Image (cartoon, rainbow, N blue to C red; front, top):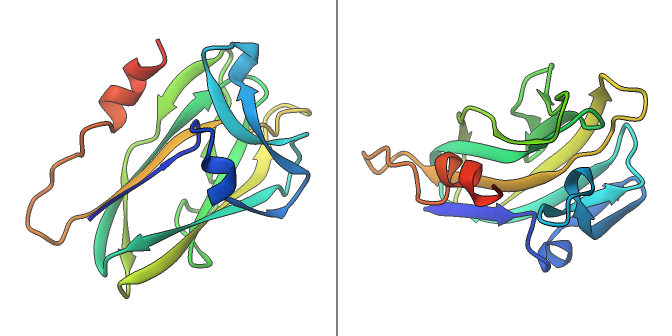
Length: 163
């Protein structure tokens, strides 16, 4: 099974749940560029947390997260059902300029079929005001069916989607 979260969709704000921080706002234009809309916490701060719940099959899954980097973006900690899955260092979205980016995919194990919750927390930044988290997509696909096919619409197409 393939699950997909589209942070740039206008209805994402209905699916997400703010846990801590200010407000989830749509549209936020990444780097002020009108052609790069997303949903983000605004105003952003260290400690911001929001969650998304998804139906997932039991088994091993590949996870791909994509979004934008820029000088004002922070470090993301991603958890699944309360367990951190990105390591203590998190995913650093800092860059000298605004650019699309997809982190290398990584694997997680889901212990039961059913609803599972991804939690997104801003844990730091390289810039004193750099706590923005402008994401585009989170995708997860089950690897237990014997195939390892990256779904259409993943890293390669994301990197061309916003050019």
